[in-house]
Image 1 (cartoon, protein in one colour):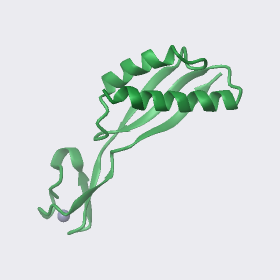
Image 2 (tube, rainbow, N blue to C red):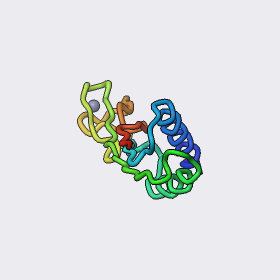
Image 3 (tube, helix red, strand yellow):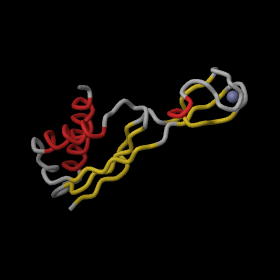
Image 4 (cartoon, protein in one colour):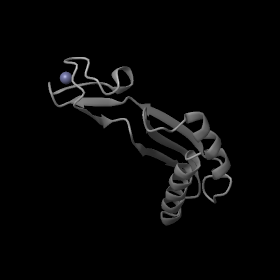
Length: 114
Ligand SMILES: [Zn+2]
């Protein structure tokens, strides 16, 4: 279950920032998660609920997950397309000389504090 590792990383990072800035409490955390980042949102939430109780600043923190669409780029015809729909094969020209542009990342988008 690699979600827990990712959650711990994010939670520790936010906790460190909150302490640095002498924040009283982090009330909401918004994360952007790529469609193909292999994170299961439901598992991620469970891990987050567990992890936040072990922090000082995130005890009552609400988690907002924003799923980002995965986009691939085709080197043969210089066009982009939805990765989840077509995977590695370009729907425009049929080439499989493609790579993932976005959809693989986990990013902190916003932190709301008191
Ligand atoms: Zn193409």
